[in-house]
Length: 428
Ligand code: SDX
Image (tube, rainbow, N blue to C red; front, side):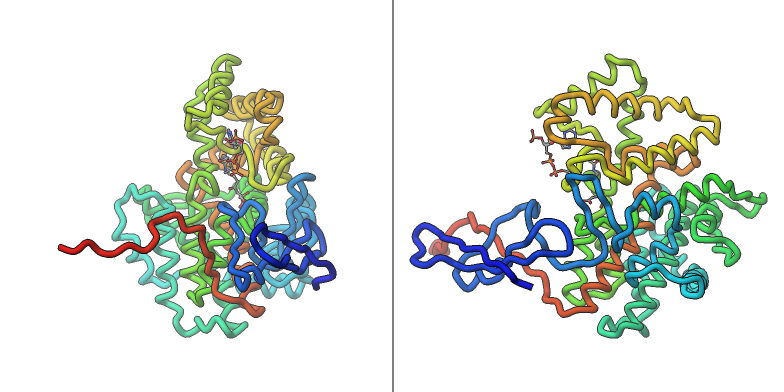
């Protein structure tokens, strides 16, 4: 793969160091720095601003152009022409399924949506008002206890059945965490419903009345699942890869990914956007400008949630589709003048004209509009990041599977040590 070399000269080192340079199918070339260790040198890149941690063929992002490809297909085409189950197949296996492959894959997922009856007991240990993400972290990690028969991660078939089980059971466990919060009985999945319909059914139906699935909600839910499915080596996916590199079982790795996603700088931002819009309260010019000024103030910890991105220095292509979906859903619900949507749109408009945001290339990201749609669908704010986790499970498990399908080493970064050099323990 190395067709070129980088030459590193370091003051104080007699000889220069030659490092291979690799070119991928697209995106920046990489310098292979693994040989630096032998020269007594480490690279230093806190926050991984310019570090490629692996090779991957799953998702490509061009942050400058606002491009997101899943196995080469643009996210806006997939979001409008495909569905979440087909996208799961594409991410996991690398190609779009034909009809027979789709039906077989969808059937396998459907027949794994139920969870072991004993798993319901896990919930009883939580307070009723536990955040559903805390429940998800615990319960998903505990799934390993039920599948010891298929946890040999060196076997392709064990990796595949674990992926199917996780894709299938995440909506069930997510809906159970909501039902536990609201004190309603858990609802079993139905095999006659598709993925998004089943999730809405398990979330909102109850034994006392017939729940009609709103097709507008089901389509919007499926699209939201698609828009959050995968995003290259983001913080939670990197967490899953690192956990997987130790040989940990897939359920433990996904639980680690859920924990990393929860942070407000990452997947927790969708919940934080709604809380921010609540705090802003009205779309008056002076009120919005006050919050824009807070976001610009270095002494104020307030950030414009749903804005900015480590990779995108242009519009997040997912945010564009999400905004269109937001307009569609709220118009169909007769809520086109939803006050929070008005605040969000005004906030976006003012921010995109403000030098601070323009200079730093801060644009709305995937989380900026998703919460408004979810709230319009009656989903409680504390479930927003849970829904992100349900969707991102396919991304996490596809990267885990990709890593384990090739040779890999345990991930073990080094450091720039700034503590005490050796000193003796004081004599008593
Ligand atoms: C997701 O990685 C992924 O792919 C993630 C994700 C995925 O699908 O997996 O896309 C999902 O996590 C989307 C991001 C959701 N998070 C938020 O919306 C939270 C608000 N955004 C910020 O916290 C921030 O933009 C990050 C965390 C998203 C990115 O942070 P970086 O890349 O470390 O950038 P930075 O914090 O260094 O910001 C650069 C400058 C700084 O100002 P200066 O020091 O240069 O003066 O921009 C400022 C920041 O203060 N800035 C913001 C801001 N985001 C960045 N200022 C105000 N409001 C913001 N939202």
